Image (tube, rainbow, N blue to C red; front, side, top):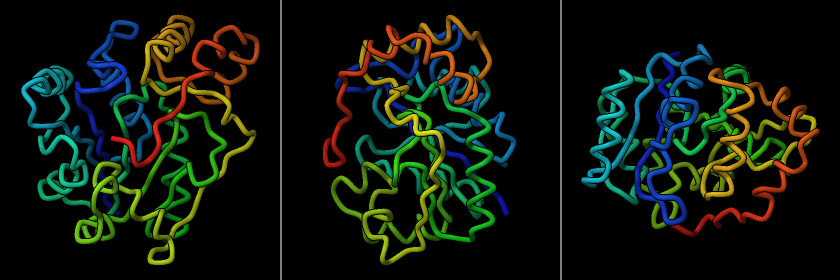
Length: 241
């Protein structure tokens, strides 16, 4: 089974423009996502899918600098961007990542891949019943299913790539991977300046290598001041761009 990882990345962001190329411990946010995904050991190929916007020339340049393939496509039709990657790279399975999750845990990625492979389903995610911190979720989908969604998905489902699948679960074999303990109160994604303050503090403490979710959660338990930095931030609704 050939597994293709795709990281969606662009400079545009309504709340934190340019976040994917901000520097964390000497590396860009995007490079940290790339390294964590690669260190999972389950990907045969990893590709960044960015946009045709001139601002994303910088993403293309960063991909060249860190030695990762990059393709370009529409800004808001992210599903079409993913399909463009599929047209260039053979795969049986796709793992979807976003470039605003610099604390991605390679061990969680590997675990999700093992469970998906054993289950033999169409799609699996860790966010159907959320117990992981936001920013550490993993999605896995069979390539033929992702291609089939192209003819079905409209509006916000094309922006969110896989949302048509899990909101039409009667039409697909969908399962959720639920992890314990429940750490869903933690917000470890990068979308605002307050998210940045927390993530920068974490990287400042742990250093360059990816951190396991358990080690990170244990440390944050003793730092409620850091958890409070972005506890007030609301995640955008599915229908929001």
